[in-house]
Length: 544
Image 1 (cartoon, one colour):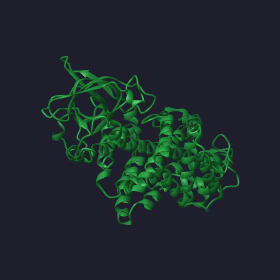
Image 2: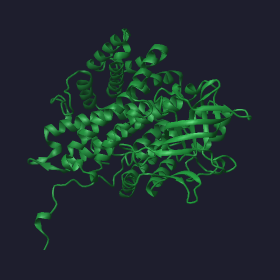
Image 3: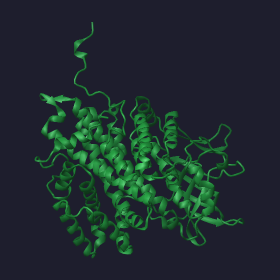
Image 4: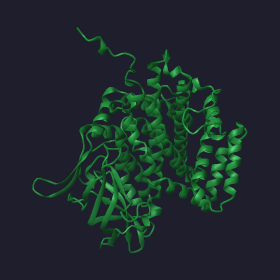
């Protein structure tokens, strides 16, 4: 006879067996808003297919296994030959292969590709964020390579392929390739102009021999890498293939894999170059300018990744609260918990709406949209990624002790949450980049003001925030010391303007009251009680 004390009751069922795309109303509406109507049916079918996979028990198990079995470095084979290979759990390969086949590296080659990819990236990385890095780097390498038409013609079809061709072979023998990136060094960090890796020209025009090190090299199992090194003419961008055309391995010595806080299924490495063959990308001395478009694209992916994590954290918190009872009723119906959940939902929806707006600007590609991106991408990268960790912490707390246990998946989200704020330039780097755009590119501010101006007059709190921001920008004396304050206001005004224009009134009202109107405390769950918080929470509930 079973012991009655072991009967399990009042536990939320796993959030599994659902369509991650269809259950996210803000994401669905954003795709519908930004895509040409002629593309919508195909995009909905594609994204719902990916959403059903992402919410399936099998794929969620892949994510858990990939996280539990991090990559291993194998420097030598059994005979003592240097091989420098990274071994991954089969589940990680399954995740990466599915991401490639879903077009998450193919945005540049199809109509509406950036919005479709952004939505897909946000869906897929909710399963396990560790496969997002190689997808991001491969996607982002395309604009950098386009500075050299010959290189782009050779490599772009491989980079945008939807075939995951595993294993190290010459790139021209593969149906699809992956790219990584190596910029930072021990002595310089984000100050890449302090790099000491040397590039010596070889006899063949445009080819060089590299000697040096990279303190952080992303996705070391990739087929090629974009790296920065000091050529005779200054800091220059280079393409380093992993395997040379004759089938021999390029010199690419992986010294160790980083033992990271989170993102554990993904390999980040330290590498040494010692007579490594490379091909120049762009002109000598223009390395930063050449690689900057890759950096901008990966920064957008940091925004997407944080928005994805926030959405998953909020979905888990709302789902738990809808099924858990306490003090005589469902948690989700308790006024104080409802306030917390609504506050978290606002942060998530604001991040999603902003991320898709940036992706749509990439699809447009016009001069004004490029100017808008120049200011909006670093501002969004600064703010959205900074909000990710507080959201993850509060969502975890909504599950109580259950959320603190590994089996819930919430600790994995928490460990992942600071990552995107650090990668591709931490907070101060982003804030200073916004200042450079303001000071050197007046078209960027004009484009930003035209964007937020479309919502002027719709909400008095937004109007006041725009006015205060303009006052802040009118006085640039000592602006570096208050750069974070300025960038925070830019991001909040942009989010507010988008929500006022596109979100349901209760969402826009709550965001403007709290984030722009000042009727907010210092922790989540301090929204004005008079707002329509139940509607905000219900909108975030993952039911499809």
